[in-house]
Figure 1 (tube, helix red, strand yellow):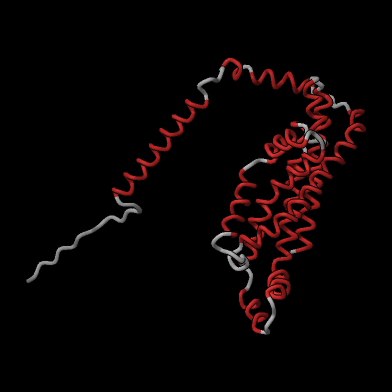
Figure 2: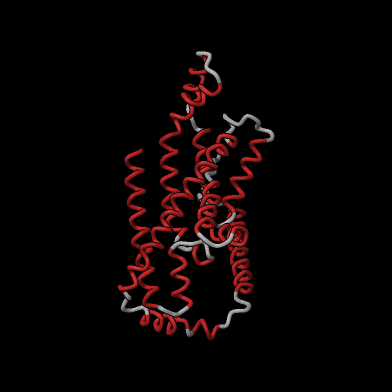
Length: 270
């Protein structure tokens, strides 16, 4: 009689080697965190950190009650801020649209040369914050609303260009082929085959970027690029905390309103 031996094996989600590598990875992350923490806090004065709650409470008490009479002086700077965001978004759209078509694989006339150049423009725009753009432009063209508008426009190129060229690449190729089969020219294929497909995405991206630019334009005045940020900087410099409260509440209300408008418009488009 042949003897049959049964072997039982306990199932495990990971092998011993995988578990060892997982624990080793967590240990390396903890060590990296401790190393970075030591570098970041090397020059920290912990006495000031310990005193921070009492300082925050002191400033908070000075911010109350808000000086509502100051609100009338903020309407013109707030209008400048909205104009900076709107005109900057418009300028960004005008520059981003051709860049997006050059960056998309299915519309770029030169995938070897023009497409990398367009992608570089998109990456360069997205890698530099609007506040840094404003700081550079204030030094180049001087302080004022123009510097803020151009800063917002340059920052918007990367955001709009990236999302738009991805939308172009996701267009239905069958519709484009059908139009090409009729003998249509390249411009006609672009006008009737690609543009109608990306228009909902285009308007949604534009409105979404305008909403973001409203928030970003509120702080451009800190570097002299105009808008309500100038009033905020002046109030901070003079320690007028009750005025700072009014400015922050006004900025909050403006951002909430722009978010509501953006959401309604995107809902209507989509």
